[in-house]
Length: 416
Image (tube, rainbow, N blue to C red; front, side, top):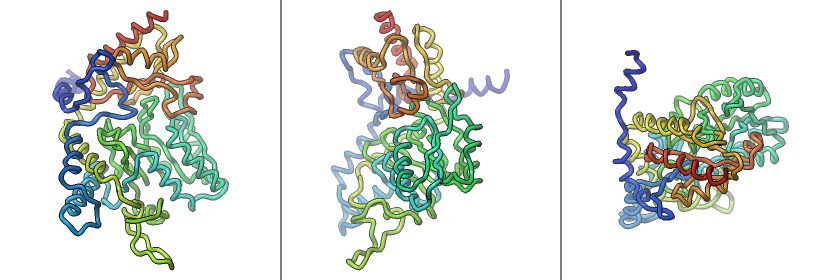
C-alpha cells in the first residue's frame, strides 16, 4: 500500500452529526422542508457556544471597557481584551497591539487604504486581481482617485487561477501596494499568497491579504506569510456580525493616521491639539462592539476544540461529491475549476437565470447565493450576469450535497 493510501485510511473521521447539534438554526424547516444551508460564503451560522458567550456578556458583565472604575467594567474589559488575544493567537501574530477591531473586512480595507494615502504619488500602481470582491476593489479605486495612482488587475487563467506570469510582469518599480484575496468568494480558488507576498516584498511593495473567505476553512499564519496586513470578518468565522479584524505590522500602523476621531483613540485632547493613543486603540474611536468581540473570541475557542485537519478533509469531501454530481444536471457548468479550492461551487445552468435557480431551491428548503456575488468585474470577464453559488461549511453533510443536486435535476427537468 502506498503512503497516500495509508494517510487516507488513518485520517481521523469528522463527526459532522455531533457538530450539527451545536448549531441550533440548522434544525429548523424552511418552506416545509428541512433547512439545507449552503450560503456559508455570505455568512456562516453560529454555534451555541457563541450565542451563550454573548448572552452571558449582556446578562452578567455589560459595561463600557477601559473606563469604568467598577467590577463590571473590569469584567467587560478583561473579556474584550481577552478576545483580542485569542485573535492574535489564531493568526499567530507577534503582539495583541497588532490586532485592530473593525466593523468587518470592508472597513478594515478602507482603513488601510485611507492610511496609506501618503505612501502614493501620481503614476504609482496598486495591484489587485480580476477575482476580487468589491470590498477589495472600490477602496483602492477611491485611493487612486485621491492620489493619482492607478489600479492594475492581475489576469486569471481559464480555470480561475491567478496567472502568475501576469503577476510577475506587472511587478515593477511603480508598484506600491498588492491587495489580494486569499480565497475567491466566487471561484473558491486558494491563491498562492505566500509566494506573491515574497515577490512583492522583493520590490518593496506593501501587501494586504483579504482573508474573509479563507479563515472559515483553514487557519492563516501571518508571521509565516510575512504580509503587512491581513483582514477578515467574524460573521464568516461562525461569529457575530458587526465586527472584523485588521492585523497589521507595527511600523506601518504607527505611521498611518487615525481612521476616525473621538473617544478612546486619544491620549490627550486640548484645543491646542490632540495626542493620539497607542496601538491598537489609535484606530478604535468610540465605544467598540464589545459583545461582538466576546462572540468572536468564543467562535475561535469553539474551532480550537475541533480537529481542524479532519474538518478540512470532510469539507474537501463535500466539494469532491459535488464535482462528481455535476454531470447529473444537464447544462450545468461550474465557474472556476482551480486545482486548489475551498468547498465552494459557483455555477450556471443553460436556460435558467441564477435568481430563478435560487428561488426554486429555496422552495425546496435549500439556501444558496445568487447574483454577481459582489464581483462584477469577474462576472464581466466570464460574460455572465451572475451565478448561483453553493458554499459549504464543516457542518454540511454529503446528504445535503446530494439533496442540492436532486433539487437542481428537478428544476432542470421543469424547464427542459
